Image 1 (cartoon, rainbow, N blue to C red):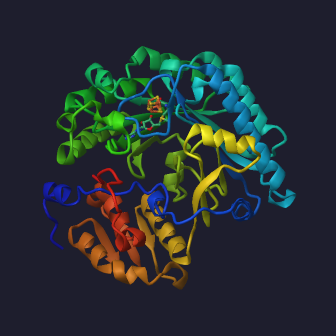
Image 2 (cartoon, rainbow, N blue to C red):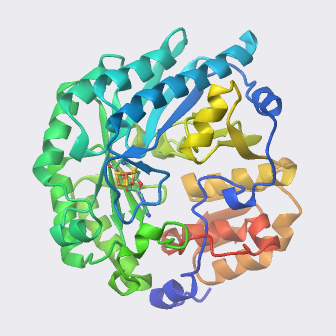
Length: 452
Ligand SMILES: C[S@@+](CC[C@H](N)C(=O)[O-])C[C@H]1O[C@@H](n2cnc3c(N)ncnc32)[C@H](O)[C@@H]1O
Ligand code: SF4
């Protein structure tokens, strides 16, 4: 095996590619399941289900943002939105037959910014969903929050209902980077929110960081990593900046010349990783870190790590129901996404309709490949040594897998493949080799950010 120098590999594999929060990836979904098909697919053994609630509001727009947001300072809209989401949940409750009603294992508030909602509204939303629902003994209740708008009262309102996990958007602490991405927040602000969370009993605090933002340098990454180590979260998501200005025009507010790309972008990750590891964090999955005391690290050690639309989780939970504008549900055999624009979403729910706008019914091939891609993303390895783990596309993919192996990124055998330490930086490229839908149809337009 001849391993190319790493820089050549970074050049070779720096191509647009999906992030694989699902397989098939969203642009390749081929249909719209009817409400009854979707509801039927939710029937699972009653081990526990997850609910994701999307709260799209933010008071100001960060220029790098790729999320589904509605920028407003009108908090009255938040009140109405809570009514509508609770109504959507009621539609599910009414339509799911009693034997399909599962205990709740996870409830996650994401966004946008859930703490845009005022504390009583946040509490009303959580209490309304939890009312009358049986929860598993180890239920995880979590929220995403922006430290600039999150008060002790927000965290207390949810802690009283049992919320125990908090994820904070940090991104970067460098003032020059913060200014150009229109997101100025100090270490003191973040410290105060972390302190409140600890005092209120939140047992896991995550920080979101991004590498590849405009004006980031090795020095700014070093300073950010040092501040993060001082603030001592339990988990870190260290995301590669996804630059998709043709989808998110606010990303045109800086020029591409200001963006670290390719090798220099990866270098920022490597610098950050070394410092975070020195600060007591362990790398798990793709771009994620956890302290050894955190359940995500334990799950990774025991091969239980899982990944869904919200990122890495410590266990698989099915089905996942998405509530709110643009939210995605996943029953393993079906995906369903809600209306992506606020007004049609609200109108459909108010007309007592499930607001699903598109989705996908997975084919037998999709199901096999989905499992392999999930295995690679969570365990850096997969096996196809049993007939039910095989599909004819694996033969088609063989040449591409062999090339990855030739480049030193994979160890490939008839029984499966293992990602090498060098290959970890190219995990998205490796998953692309198993993506039958991408292989059969090059996306018609620019869709994906770069894989490296
Ligand atoms: C919904 S936000 C987190 C909560 C809150 N809105 C905040 O920003 O503090 C989700 C996370 O997605 C990440 N993100 C957003 N746009 C991104 C992009 N273009 N590339 C990579 N990560 C991005 C950021 O790290 C952000 O914290
Ligand atoms: S990063 Fe968070 S706060 Fe900023 S616009 Fe996106 S969702 Fe809103």
